[in-house]
Image (cartoon, rainbow, N blue to C red; front, top):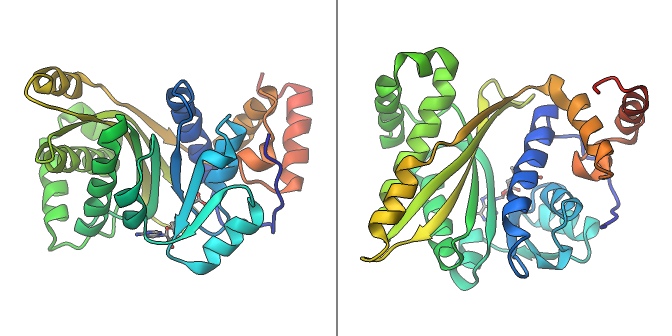
Length: 283
Ligand SMILES: C[S@@+](CC[C@H](N)C(=O)[O-])C[C@H]1O[C@@H](n2cnc3c(N)ncnc32)[C@H](O)[C@@H]1O
C-alpha cells in the first residue's frame, strides 16, 4: 500500500474526513471490479483523495490529480510522487481522456458554473458508464440565480415527511439531481442517483453535500430501460457528524487500513483511536 509523507495539513473537519473515506469506500467497490480503472480528482492542498483511494486498493499510477492552483499541484506531487499530478483545468483533462470515476470536490455553492463543470465531466463519463461525485455547499447561492429558483421549487415540492428530515439539504440534493438529469438528457445520457452524503465543515455555517451518480449513455434502443433505471433509483441519504470520527477510525483500524492516510489524520489522533480499538470502545 502507498506510504506517504505529510506536512501536517489539518484543514479538514472531522466530518469531511469521514465522508471522503465513505465516498471512496463506496466507489472503490464499484470500480475496482473493472479492468485498470482510472480515476480523476482535484488535488487540493494535500491531495487527500489520492491517499484514501490508494488505501482502498486503487493503484496510485491510475490516479490523476489536477488543480488550477500551482501550490496544490506542488504539494500533491511532493506527497504522492507516483501519482500523475497536472497543473490544468479539469475541463481540459476530461476533454482529452476518459475516466471511470471523477471526484469533483469543488466544495462551493451550487451555481450555473459548477453545474456546467459537472455536466461536462458527466458527459466525459458516458464513454465508460463512469461515476461522478460532486460536492456542493448547501447555501450561499445567488438569490437571483436560476439555481436559487430551482432550489425553492424543489423545496416547495418536498412532501411533509421529507420536510421533517433536513429541508435545506434535501432540496439542494433534489435540485442537483434534477438539473444534471435535465442537462444530460440533452446529451443523450441518463444520470442514475446512487447516494448523497451531508456533513458540516468546521469552516462553514452551511452543511456540504456530496452526490454520487452513474452516467449511462442512451440511444433509441436503450433509452426506455435507462430512464426506468434512473426513475426507480432510490438514493440513500447519509448525515455525518464530527462526533462520528472515532468510531469510523476504529472501523478503519479493524480493516487494517492506515488511519493516518485514510482519514488524513495527525499521529496524536491515531494513537487515541488505536487505544479505543484495543479497549473495544465501539465494538
Ligand atoms: C476543495 S479542494 C479539493 C480538495 C480535495 N478533494 C481533498 O479532499 O483534499 C478544490 C480544489 O479544486 C481546485 N479547482 C477549482 N476549480 C477547478 C478547475 N476548474 N480545474 C481544476 N482545479 C480546480 C481548487 O484550486 C482547489 O484546490
